[in-house]
Each structure stands twice: as C-alpha cells, then as structure tokens.
Image (tube, rainbow, N blue to C red; front, top):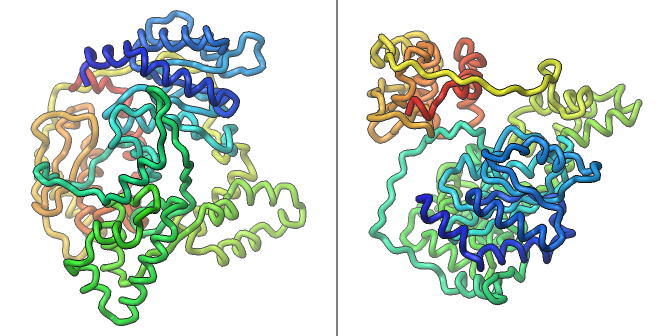
Length: 493
C-alpha cells in the first residue's frame, strides 16, 4: 500500500473518530492499551485527541527523542506520571517487554503476516509470563476479507521464520457464491451508529480439531454444525462408503455450509473444511475434538504450582505427572508432542518463575550492530551440495525418495529460506543465501529440510523428529532464527 494512500487514510477524520470512540466507550475494559498507527501524523493526531478526552496518553516514533522515557512510563504503572495508552507506528512490534498490556488496537493496514503477528503478540504474554489472562485485539479493518487472519491459532503460534512451504495456485477468474444465510447472519450480527459499527454478538472459540499435521479452530456457534457433520460421516464409516461419500459431486464445501452450518453465525473457513475432508478421506474417521477447558486442566504452569504448594505431591511428582499423562494422552501429545516434553515444561515451571531456563545474567540492551552480507557467492554448486546431503543423510530419507531438481531463486527474498514444490519435485533456495557469509553447512541443512518435505508436506512431529537428526541441528537452526538477523538484510536485498 503506497505511502500516499496511507497518509490519505490517516487524515480521514471519521476513521479517527471511530478509533477514539471505541476506546472511550470501553475505557475500563480495555485498560492498558497499545495502539499501532499508520504514520507519525496519525500517531500525533490520535494522541492529541485522547489527551483532549482526559486520557493519559503519549506517542513514540523513530524521530522522537524521548522514546525510552515514554516507554518506561508506560511500563511502570506505579509512577506518578505513568500513562495508560501508548500510540506508536511499529517501534513496539518486537523486542519490548511490556507483559501487562490488556488491549492492542490495530489501526494500520498491513500486508505483512510477520508484522501483524508481532503486533498481535504484544498483548499475548499470558499469566505465566507475567502478563494478563486475557487480551483484547481490536482490529480497525479497512479490508473486510482480512479481519479473521489473526484468529487462526496456526498464524498466531507461527515460529516467525516466515517460511513458505506450499505452492498454492489461485484462479482469479472463478466467482465463489456465499450462502444467503451467512449474509443474513452477518447483517444481524452488526449494527451501524453513524459512521461506526458495533457487534451485537460475541462469538468465542471453544476448542479445536486435531488433524495431526495442524489444528482447526472451532467457534462456539459452530459446534452443533460440526456435530451434525460428524453424525453424517459416522454413518458413512459404518456403511464402509466414507471415501466415495467425500469425493461425490453432492458433497462439496458449499453443500456442507448449506446443510450443516446455515444460521450459525461465523461460518467455518472453506480451507479448514477442505483439510477436514482430506483427513476424513485418509483416516476414514472424524478428527478428534479438544476443548480449551481440557487444555487448561493440564496446563504445565498450573500443575507446577500444585506441586510447589503441596509437599506430599512434590515428593511423588513423577507419579503424578505419569497419571496426568495417562489420563490425557491424546491432548498432551497434540500440544506438547510427547510425555517427555510435557514433563520438562512442568519441571521448568517448578524451578523458574517463567518456565524458561535463564541463559545468563540479564544486562542492559545496547544498540545492535549489523553486518553486510558478502556480495561474493558461495564457491560450490547447489547440485554438489544436494549430492552430499543425499549421501550423508540418505538413511534419514524415506525409501521412495527421488532426487529433486535444485536451483536458486531469480532474485533475493526476505520472506523464506527455501521452498519445495512437490508437483515438479523442485527445491528453490533463496538467492539471498548465495553469499560467502553463509556457511556451507547451513545451506546443506536447509537442503536437507526441504528434502524431508518430499515425505512430509507439513511440519508434523515426525518431520521435526527427522529434522533434529541432522548433525549439529541446534547450531544451524539458531543461526537461521537469530544470527541471520545480525546481517543487514535490507541492504542485501
């Protein structure tokens, strides 16, 4: 989105009034709030208007000399000059530790998933990390079709690498129909007051379906629809015709939406339904459903607190953890992969307040020095590196593995390291990494990672297990996730 358009949006008085009015009407509920604005002009305009309304508010952006002092006033609520609302552009997207933020206002449009994830993440520290039990995410959405992106747990819990794994083709000539019932529910669900919109109903997620390689979020109003769908599938399983039922012309996403979810408010995502269909086809069974209440009962933080506060329980903690695992094996394996990981998290919480092993003494953060990526390319061909990987790691690749083609991308990108295209059996390595600054072994690890995708399309627990079998896995993963950020990527691009 060009800067000229952002400026135009920022100057729209009606839009700013909606933002200010939304905060004022829910001031007690929203509490400590961070607002992500469009630009410096928008920052100042929103801050000035909030101050006029009697709100203790300040703004920060890169040219402001008092940013550190203002952030400290926002962090420390005990100060006499503390502030309740902080407006910024993107300075607080990452790296700032303000765990007790209660509300995040998203007033700037963004096409970057990473930036959106970082903005939403400012309010998601949680009680075990010194944060709040709940967070309000208020999205002032100029593009209606993007309003639910951050509701997807897969998006929120992404590890931040920004790697793109799927080669998805879109046909922009097709026109999708929307059930009338869905449109009617949307109209019923919102009302207009002048230029602003208020929601009449609050629909909350209550759990998820486990598809082994991913989870599908389920909202409260969708439960009855999924129950009807499961009943229909169970009947087909009983009759032994589930695969023909799923692939029949009469059984489509639109058919399911019409037949099982009409008049249920927020409709299931079509992509999510397709993934459920694929699961049913492969497993010939309906996926397992877990509720958030089940998750909360086995929360490692909660279990650790019980162990700490009960001397008898502390003495027999191993037996207690074994008992919890045996009673809740399915959901624990879904959330933590296995009993060992789950037990380790509980023990970490019993030893450390935040459940994380301290890496050393905390020191004051200094300005981070960045380095330029060397413009000199690596001196080995990708074909040679691929051959070395296959020879050295062949025992970790499945029996039907076929040597893929491999090449550099046509230009450097900052969104991913590499891609594997299953249809053409091709690996593309980001040309950004074709630099003397990148160790050969790091490139070989990336090639190995993409080779594994020939067997595992998704990052399943089995995929992660095989990935960790690569020699010095932790060293190369650490470089890609953390050390690579020390280089000036923008300059390299």
